[in-house]
Length: 195
Image (cartoon, rainbow, N blue to C red; front, side, top):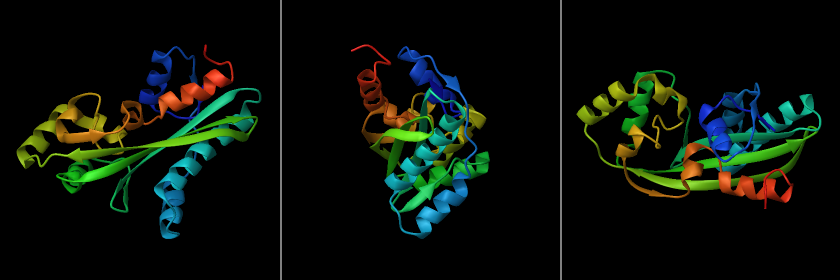
């Protein structure tokens, strides 16, 4: 099985549940695709699903006979889509924008075989950030460091980032970037994991 992603978090999630995966990140111009979808007024779900599908099918075409998992995650704050911050200053601005508000985190996953999509699903989590102080934010970024640059929300919910939130509604794995339980259900149906 192949994961069409360079995400260490997604790969680790799959490995922890007993799946052997090889990572083969797909080269997809996510920025232009997101800009196009946003300009057309498309939904976050559609955009995340198409990005996951493009990753999965692109890698799947190169590895016939292998199941390939593609995934994507988009953070939506009232119609404004966020990307991974490029610098700690970007992360600071992003977290200030999210502070005291509820945002949606859409995680989509697609499985492809022989270059074609054979399954797709998505899930949404709702996260409310507390109204933390600038001093807390500075301390958080100093402690978390560049690790926050790998997260679309500039937080790592599974660690220090949990302190940023007042309330969370949704699946833990969805927040980490993969609707894992639904994916496992599909894989059980295909004999990849035991029933």
